[in-house]
Image (cartoon, rainbow, N blue to C red; front, side):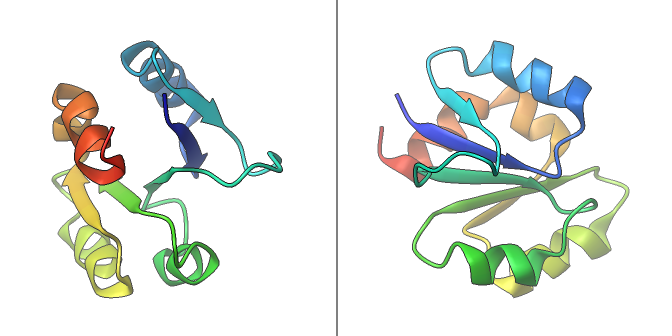
Length: 102
């Protein structure tokens, strides 16, 4: 079980992720424990700030396929993986395992 910090994630989508990732602990930025992975909606956060705030933690960014600028910005900021939101939904467990070695 990984501790996954959600940043900038819409509450409705966070609920969907909670269902998809039931075997993991999803946390908010108020948690005092360091996360094993950060998942961020790159259209709702500043990617450079997130990369700077979590330099030792793998970061998975996502955005809609119609927003290549945000996806590219997150890649340039140093996110470990940046994917389309649909891919996150379809392959969430595989992406989590890839980034956390779980």
